[in-house]
Length: 89
Image 1 (cartoon, rainbow, N blue to C red):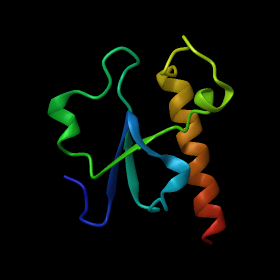
Image 2 (cartoon, one colour; image 1 turned 120 degrees about the vertical axis):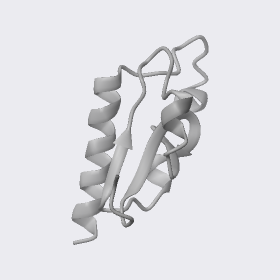
Image 3 (cartoon, one colour; image 1 turned 180 degrees about the vertical axis):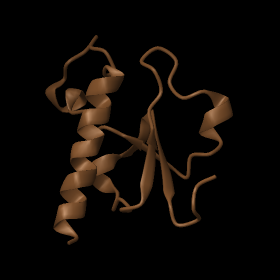
Image 4 (cartoon, helix red, strand yellow; image 1 turned 135 degrees about the vertical axis):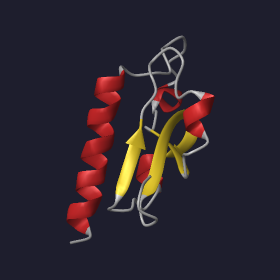
């Protein structure tokens, strides 16, 4: 069980882009696999649904994948958490 002051973030394709959210410092990030995402058994624990912003629609690129490798996605999310936490110090 997590302490009550922790936010549980979960990654989904059509969620709020992470750069549009003020991230909490005490947090857990749940990242699903590339094919199936986060299971329904786990997603019920997610407090805030987040995504990595996609700029493909701005470039008008069609037929490209909507997902990232889970390790790459985790790296991007950790970078954004660190960046925001450094700015809040």
